[in-house]
Image 1 (cartoon, one colour):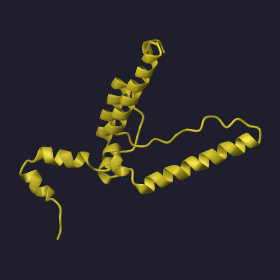
Image 2 (image 1 turned 180 degrees about the horizontal axis):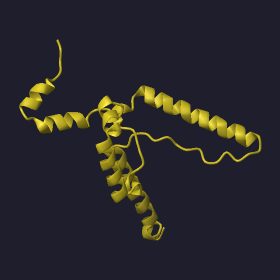
Image 3 (image 1 turned 90 degrees about the vertical axis):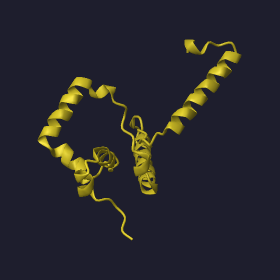
Length: 136
């Protein structure tokens, strides 16, 4: 059984919202995203947006949950291990290896909610001991 959609039919039926939602769900490494990044008109619009809004306002890049599978996790672990080994070799030779960067993992609303709960718990502990969490 073949599954899928007829994009030509969606276009003819003027199903713009469905088409846009499908485009938004494409992986970052898709031909569509490559074409957008290499289109001169889109490049101008993206550059203008970045100039007006600044890159500093954007959150640091993190992979999407749907693109972070077992292979991505294993590759991240391998890269982290290699960086750690490099730092150890530099330190053993008497050098300063510098900070070892932590490669990002996906962040979900569950992670954000857990961080808020942990922060509230820590502030509660500080309050019980007579500290004002706002002073720290």
